[in-house]
Length: 253
Image 1 (tube, rainbow, N blue to C red):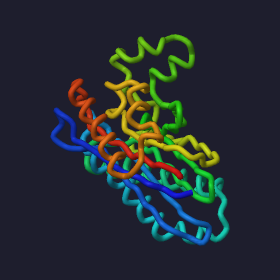
Image 2 (cartoon, rainbow, N blue to C red; image 1 turned 90 degrees about the vertical axis):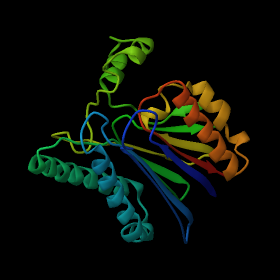
Image 3 (cartoon, helix red, strand yellow; image 1 turned 180 degrees about the vertical axis):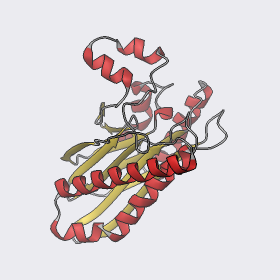
Image 4 (cartoon, rainbow, N blue to C red; image 1 turned 135 degrees about the vertical axis):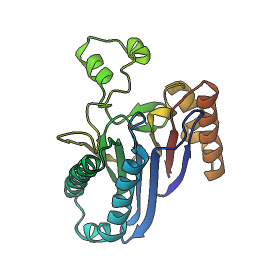
């Protein structure tokens, strides 16, 4: 597979800082191309969210450069996912300790995907998301939120959840959870596109609007990908999205 990708983040309309942190790393190895993409959303209502998200991004940036080359020698995505989860648990402990020492509160979501050897692995904490786009749009991750849990239990409808004041209440996040259990998804790469985004990117637009702009058929080059992603960011802002807005778009061909 060949990867074409773009990454965009916007402070939004009301916040003083951008607490989202994003990362895309792309490289070559004997088996072809490898790409890692991560979106971390620092907790909006918590102080130092930007520090939490950036700390996690730096750790995975270092992992890609220093550890991934060894993993590629005997590739096993189950092993990689286990190491990612250990990294996240270790970062969770370190951020909690730092918060206690500094008498602050902070945390971050984490949604990361690694494409390698015609497969992908996703590790996920919180409510940032991964979607797959072809002629339809499919959410690959499950939100770890109060409202998502209630929808699954049947005690709340999707429409009720959209307007519930607890819609951003996370069940776990890196840096603020006593115990952390990231969810893991392993799958086979398919031609089309994949998108990672923070919740600020999706609150004010519909999945239909996402697909209309980001259908892989229309993503003819990097310039178009960037233009269409920026259009959706601006559409969110026009509709008074108050959160930071981040998106990573990856086309496979």
